[in-house]
Length: 109
Image (tube, rainbow, N blue to C red; front, top):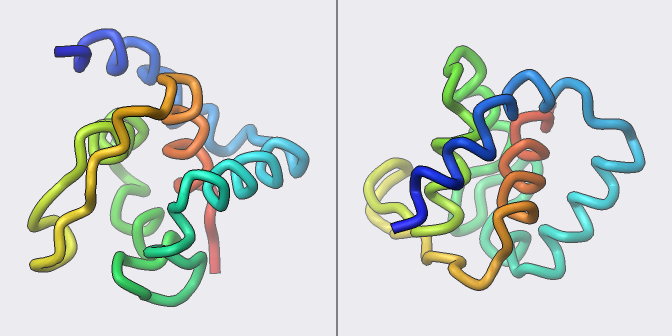
């Protein structure tokens, strides 16, 4: 399992979430679009999965938020937001996973 390497890569991610530049945020949004994330998620409205603004709100006080989100992106999740599971995305690189997880935490209303 690659949980430990991903977790170590993401340890500083929460602090970095607030430090994303506008260009990095735009790049992360493009990555989300290219990866199919925006087929099930929206910034502000629930589609199949929760709106990213709701995800950011849920994890705002969680020091391990980036690692938790990264694990859900990499391996999928079930039961966190209802009955519909989130599929795994094993083909994404650890860097892309970190970028997406960090970006989701920056989404605001």
